[in-house]
Image (cartoon, rainbow, N blue to C red; front, side):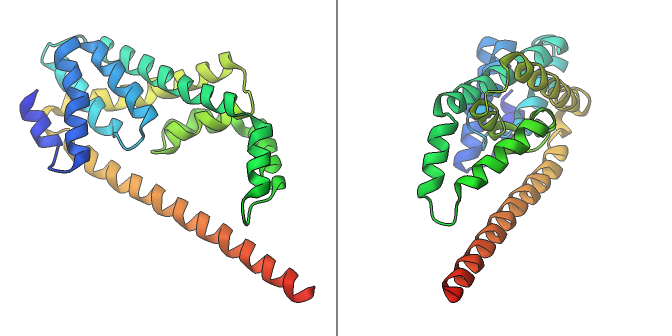
Length: 219
């Protein structure tokens, strides 16, 4: 897979990391796809948009079956998500409230409102979060914090991951060496998500600073 890896990677640390993770497919076959995707869940900067098409390309070359690539990618997604879910569950809601009470500009009520929202919409958030870069991994933590039933979490994560993984494995299967064309568009999408998050945080800080100033002025 060296030719494709050279195409996928650059001289950055991230390119080297992708090369190292994807090389597992050469060593242990389709199980390497699962290990790579599990690592992607635990370390979001590893782009599944690079790993999955390479798995599809390997399958098209006969290294392993297409269904094996999809199956083990989905297993890896669920395993990685469960680790983050467990971290959220161990962290717990009470500890999160205590930390929120000590942070500047953050209120305990913010945590309570977020928890209430997650209780109402957490299922949709976990499922559709699998299609959004960065959130694909992070959404597992609040699911653990609010103690979403494990079976429900695994079901939604598995279904969402199956759809996402199938799409990108098939990209590698059908596009072959040209799979990186799709990765370029996904990079743009990921950058949009990052900008949206930064703007949302900036707006939150602006509102809280303005509220603090108003209270100080009134006092």
